[in-house]
Length: 367
Image 1 (cartoon, rainbow, N blue to C red):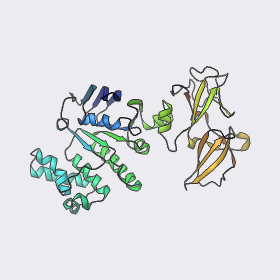
Image 2: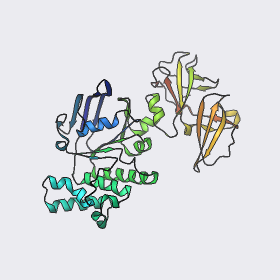
Image 3: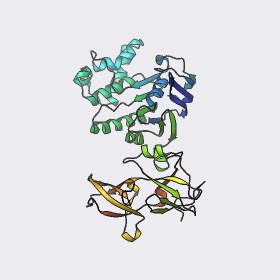
Image 4: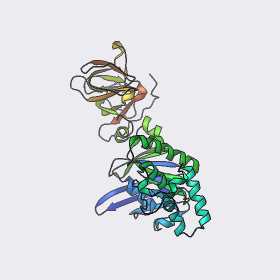
């Protein structure tokens, strides 16, 4: 196991800057997830840690060593790819044992390591004799992880390993990866564009946007207090609703574009009339009695999901689109007016120009 330190990491392809100064310290045994949209640089960053891409500028350390100039084989890392990268002509046993054979490890030790990995991953003995084409997608991914485990690396690197699996199998494999990392305690970096994977797997999350770290913290920190509009919209499903507004003259209210207004605690740097973006998560908007309504809302499309009901509609007449998530099955019709409210602590205020969060001076529960 080993600590990983990224210091001011940059990477460019020609005139295109892909990674723009990433700094991060990953503790020994920590599981960190790098998340962001396609093209944000997350796989490039992972490949630089692996040694598959050169570092344009900055320094990568694994354990006590700076590894910028070391070959992948010298870094004591193991990587699991989304396409499994198994040798089609070898058996499962052969695929898992290959890296150990070329290192000259004795046959008895190879057998012991392969059998232990197979046991951890619940791969039955008869499956070790099959070739990859005889396996399901989930079994192939287990073999790819087994091949990484037998090497007993200091670091696991996962590059979107579940993206080729169906939805049900992804959930199962997600749980197995988390259980595996907890059992082995190996420092791990996991790249994904799936925010559910990121929320459930990582002890911390790094949100990348166009090569820049928008926010780094625990999943709950990013969910409850997103630092930017980008993070707020990327974390959470369905996505956070955003509505244009302006800070009221007393600094304790925000007036929405459609005319509704919400009471807020005093905000830091909240000049009266300042344009802001108001964020409200669908699950935090709630149905209330007509007299307690804070928002004027009209339902347009209703989706019954069983455990929840998603209502897509708008504020005021032809106002901004807003999604509401309500617990249980709700009999709501298109065109119906719904009285909605939201607790102060669940309202997020961002600067309209920079997209950065405006921190609240008081606790959100203050009146």
